Amino acid sequence: MVVRNPSKGSSPVPVATYVTCDHTTSSVSYFLGAFVTDLTRLHGRRVKKRPVMIVCDGSIVLLQSLSYNFCGVSLQELISKYYHIVTGKGQEDSIGLPILHRCLSHVMKNAKDLCRKHAPRHYHLAMHVFGLMTQATTLNDLDELVISAAVVFSSSHSEINVEKHFQNLQRLMTKARHWDIDDTVIVEQDFVVCNLICFYSATIWS
Image (cartoon, rainbow, N blue to C red):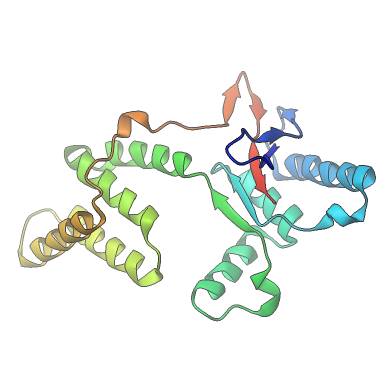
């Protein structure tokens, strides 16, 4: 676990390490709970302030543990609260929740695997679409991308509707200037699995 360095441009500061072969939510939650307890014991209750953002890999175990220990709710409930916020229906008690953010390098690494498996003939187009999805700033933008991608990639042959959605994807990619994706440099970061020993890394931005 590392936290942001107070000096701009400097490397994050490691604050805790957990080595385990018990890949469960309860195990990771115990570690995070113990970390918060030790932090409070050393520095007092003034450090109980929630982090603004938590960046982690895509492990569901880690996501669930972080949600419970730093946000005080289950992952499903947290996602629901996030959805209400972005749709303008969020309650006041939800606005101050930490932002649980999945590391983009892990998202794109998974995207590479999915595109190679499910769209091998159109791999580069699929990767560009995933790149666009990560840049969507509104639900309407994301909906438009998902609908057009679903039509294009699920169709067995070309016809007017497919052509329309393909042109829409081209327009969006041209607008975003997202044609220069180099998938060879997409690598996972801060996550190593070796001999059933799991090293979990989370970046907590305060």
